[in-house]
Length: 125
Image 1: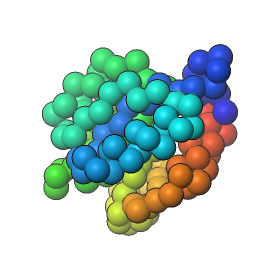
Image 2: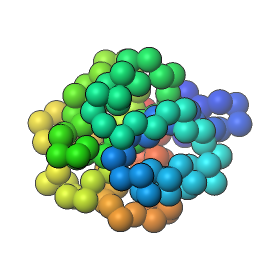
Image 3: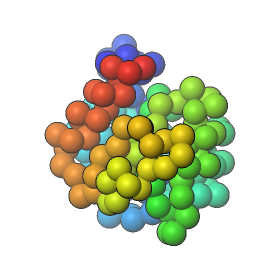
């Protein structure tokens, strides 16, 4: 998988999740995988700001941020060439528009699903 990873294979990951416990779990899983979380945003405004400025190899976005879709954040990241992995409790039905065929993980998820999804994005990059 080469998403712009460091020589050690570690990815710099932007994490956008409005549930703090899920964000903490994802941070732990990503760290266990050897990746570095370079930013965590809990809402659309903070996520948009980070999407414009944070140097990330991958972003993991919760589809629904306190009732607001994260697709505008994904648009910014896509424009910058940052691959996006969606996390959703709605399954494929939670993805719409340009992101209908995007890689996603269902919440709740386990670490194997996260590893697999990151690998899928790496294969597509």
